[in-house]
Image (cartoon, rainbow, N blue to C red; front, top):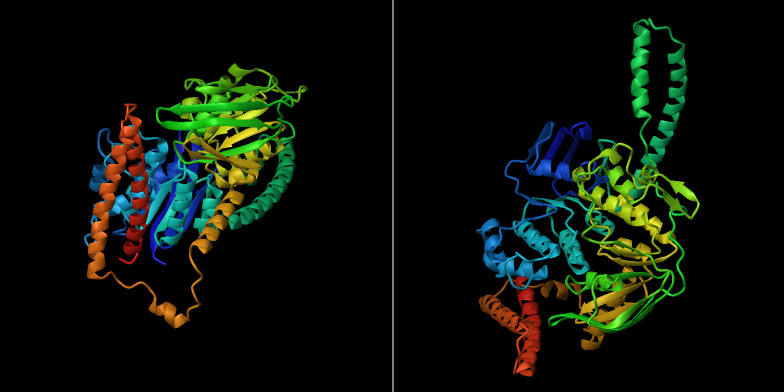
Length: 595
């Protein structure tokens, strides 16, 4: 295996806050590494150091000569006013041996990522769309080493699964930070963990990492117990000694202080006790939606939606970006008014809303002061009382963390603080809009345990498949144009249903082909494109571009709000274009795969 990257004795701190101290590790060709750590302990900082954006306090980072590296940041930025295509043509290095032009490759990649019009600007794109463009940029560069910081954040489920399959098939070397546990399990062959300012490396995927890590923590917990027992004896010795000590005694004194520091390590991560942090009472009537409709121009969010929500129901909402998931939950709470119909919410319902935007906590305040402003007495189960400091400790904020200013918190720490602020009011109906973005895996496990025991109602909008599988008992699948399907099961159940449905349709559509021998299979392998097929491929590219332009023109007319005289004719043509695009893109992919 070729060594691609070597990190030696790397140290980084911010003031008196040490992130990692003298860490050493390597990345070899073929490694697909997931980097894991608690929020605020240096994951993103380490990636920024490797990419050259930040400098370490000390240590060395060495890349193999000539290595091509691609880096995806958490929050990509683009120059306003520029089209996606012009940006990518300028920033992606073209391969001179690639018989396809760079522009064709860009269009194909953007299409796979769900972006159909590369000539538009990204000025008003959502976070998910911006992330897709940035992904296209780094993937098109075909780097030897790909470094990804939270690549699945803000992506819809279909795009997450496409990226997962793409990275699993590619031979590129990978180092990434992600909280998506299915993604880690299916893509990675090695896990690196930052813990207690050190590096621990585990061979294998995420599932094996969990087992090996549990064994390590069990061993370390036993060692700490022994150290604390020894420390008690040494403290007794320290108290008995006279002030004047010899050299041998001074050596023992130094060892005592070293032992004291090492024994203060804490491996207890399950600090939120689900049996203690409960909801307030919720009655049998939750809410009813009666013939609710909502649209923005030609875009339909709900169309005569009717549903009765049951007590203790745990619902997941999935769907592509822009179908109206966040609008749905805002309407439920009265934050957005419906065009028609009504929401009838029960009198005992007390919402707790965790939104993508987060609460507006004052950045100039310390963590403890911001929570104390909300309440000075946290009451659990009507009898148990906590101070804000005790409550924050249960959300993995140590006493020193609580003294940090909100403006200095990492993205994950800010998310965790927002979560604590929502739960402190003891809601009995939790609405969580993308709660897993930026949360570390340890906090996700704690939140999942809490929600499993939560004696109230839950609605979760999330692209985290593991999280959905752990929490929900059924799904609303928002398919666009106001269509919502109620599926009885979790996300993996839904994916299995779609797979079985697709396989059944394929069997119905195509007769079974006779069995072929291994020799026949060998002869049937796709051959290189003929001259005629190359010409067909070029023609297809032009036809697909023309159809996409016509499709975009029709969409602009539909969304204009102007009166359209020949609406039926244009709608029929629009449907024809979609069918033609499906047909021609499938043929284009078939031919391009043989290039």
